Image (tube, rainbow over all chains, first blue to last red; front, top):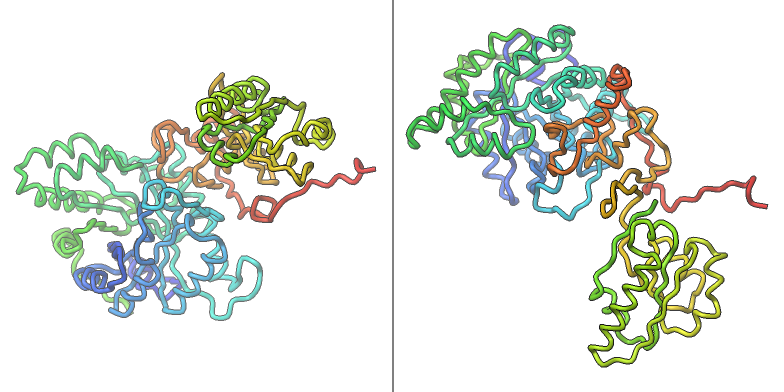
Length: 310
Length: 222
């Protein structure tokens, strides 16, 4: 078992256990109670919790501050960092700030376009892209050097993650794109929410053909539907999401008051099937504004109790 | 070419309410091609302004001139005698031309009559599209001759992002995904293996980030 950082998530994965992560969106205000409450709901059922970074470009409490709040609650955080809002000075500076609080996981993203959010008239930065951010953190950690070449005193120790969307187009470059992220230095991947399991399995087959599943920990992303309305919204309105008709039909086929339960069932069945896919090393359970359901999903999917690693 | 679009007349008149004489100055170059600031548009704007002043009962002289180029001291010099007769100039050249007029005539009030949009090309009449952002360090050799800085809404150098759907960008069904275009073109050229080369962190100092830019060719400056 070789690990590069003190990250609990990395240790769990390196020990050969299925890893479990979840995610919380910070509040649209300065009250920390909400994030603390969410974290405490799920802390015993996951290895780390992602904190989103102004997701869908809607302004919220910053990811870094929310990660520090989690840390204070004894929860390992995954600092999500988008390249949309910060140039290379701010990115490196925030990485050091996070490292000063011993935040050991980071997820590198480009971020949704600002036109989706509450600041449509704003500029975007994109000084680096997500792959270049991966390279930046790797250089800071492994070489102890800033992008400018100067030495870093006490370099960050971060387990480096990124997202992968097996369902976005063009499909034929989805695996080469993963290979590119691995070449950049990524160590774990959290995928887009998986509803089209056939397509995901096809993607994993192509991943295995190139041996990429042995070079990166792939955590399969799952999100339970709360209702048929949510399934339809995800299918039709969320970019890069692939929700097959039969999934929508299944949840729409049960009475409204039973749809949430059916959504959880679908999610657990997906996890069970994905556990059998060679190369899937864990799960990223994104219960959007439904964090209280994470323990049930994790337990019923047979992923509880979480392993203890030193 | 530089593509511009006409400003609404209401916006133009707001700035020049006090003038008694006005020169509308067009340009024979890019803005003529994109039908925003050539001789024809000078005539249209001048007529619209005369009508506006007539309706308001104001006596304002509106004259017209179209220069060969406004981004050139030599051509701007040709209207020196004429310029003095007006209270203000409304230039409908691009932002470069408008500023050059003001630099040539420091005591003259000069106003923009167009919004300068981008460097682009004519897809068809009435449709102009952006193709270059003048980053100062051309990357087209490595991107299948499609510019991701211009055509990707996130200027991603190692794309596409997860929002690319059926060849279109996440921000609009009417915007093609630059990275889909890059991949299609690399595939057509039989060079898709190039896709896996990581594009290094870009030096933006030759872009806007480095401050106002100059191209200096000493061999041409005698």
